[in-house]
Amino acid sequence: MVDGGTEGFKGHARVIVPGVTPCFECTIWLFPPQVKFPLCTLAETPRTAAHCIEYAHLIKWDEVHSGKTFDPDNPEHMQWVYSEGVVKNIIPAIASTNAIISAACALETLKIASACSKTLSNYLTYNGVEGLHTKVTEFVKDKDCLVCGPGVVMDMDSLVTLREFISLLEDHPKLLLSRASVTHRGKNLYMQAPPVLEEMTRSNLDLPLFDLMDKVLKDVVHVTGTTSKSDKKTSSLRKLRIVFKGVDGVTDMDTAGGA
Ligand SMILES: [Zn+2]
Image 1 (cartoon, rainbow, N blue to C red):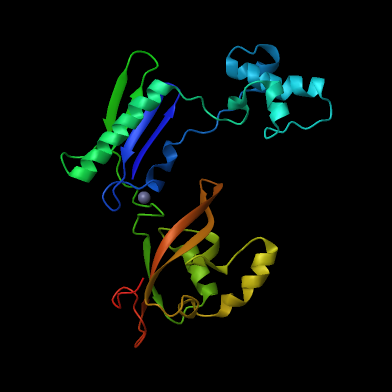
Image 2 (cartoon, helix red, strand yellow):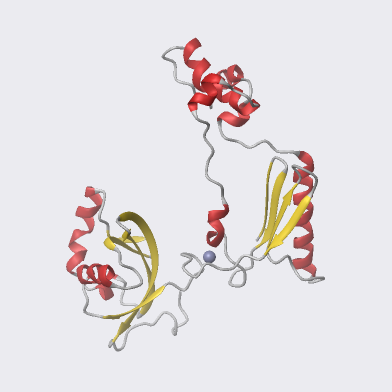
């Protein structure tokens, strides 16, 4: 995949080669957190165009249309606010930045299609705010990536029930996951919440995990649970590669050429 994006005078272009470069998920942290302006700035001293639009949207709207909810999909409402960009958090685009970034993407595509040169390795940033600055950074794969990472390998006896498996996750040194929910190929094996899903999947707890995973010797399951780090609880999603031991005469998806 050749990916490019711009935000005002800044932009990036990158090449993602499956299995070779970091995948999209590996670098998902590159997306900046959503910016919200403090309400006091808006009420007291709106300084920039964005402040003024938010001022109109958050403060003036209520003064003029008391009780009427602002709807960013209503053209009349948007006309009133007068600029549809910032209210919906759509970032303004600048044609010259778009041209520079699309040229970089086109060049990478040409290199891949014709093999005329080595591709970008692997992330180019462009900044035209003050003068012109470009830089290439080689990002590396995230070894714990849910998409391209190998996942934590767990050897499992085929008789282990789902309930026992969930409690094993709590003590596993690489996981330490409590209250885990388990999915296999998009199917919920056990969900801790909401109550309606917990009730629907509860009967699986006493079944062997091997049976629930369609008696395949090696496969991936995804687990979501809470981890505690210095008294702080965070939810985390992990990829596990389960390998069952001591089973004869069943399909191994890896060696049978399936999956
Ligand atoms: Zn990845």
